[in-house]
Length: 265
Image (cartoon, rainbow, N blue to C red; front, side, top):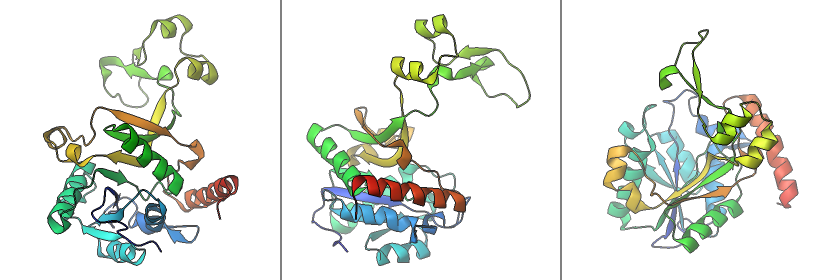
């Protein structure tokens, strides 16, 4: 197991958000994929990434905290007010950055968010993302994939508000361009992609800087990212949404295939 932290003071810190039982699937972060909890998958990839200096887990739950320490991560004790079903990311981000500064005097340059529920990542993915942000000096980065739902085929409903199911309403194109008005809504996916290659942020790896996390903009508008955000394009097969046992089984199959293709041990 890699030493954590690897370097002090750390320049690049992973923060893994892992709430406990107060969610739609209790202790979802401890459900097992390939015999290992989802929490382990996030910690392991952070520890094996060469450019990550420290791996932390932000949690309010004692069971998750014990597991995180067992797997080699440092635990940031998250206040329960930042661990509610309605809590956004800003609370745990700001608490974690403040905690590191006050407890250890750490002032990392980058914060990397590795969500346990997006487990199909490789250390090389994390390193490539970190390397790019450090090299370019950009404000942050999000992993993306080609959008599974082209905005070309999206519509606004009347009044640009939600309407009940089983009702009809006038529509206007969400993506309103001269090309769209000429060719209509039913172009094939390949033609739409060739004209409008749009990407979707899928949440496997997020990188931002503490100066944005602690900014007035974050507190007021709940936005921890600066304006200069870059994208790292992931293999769409790595994007999974785990809610059921079947989702876990399918993810395990995909993971075995990805490992074979990459020649991973």
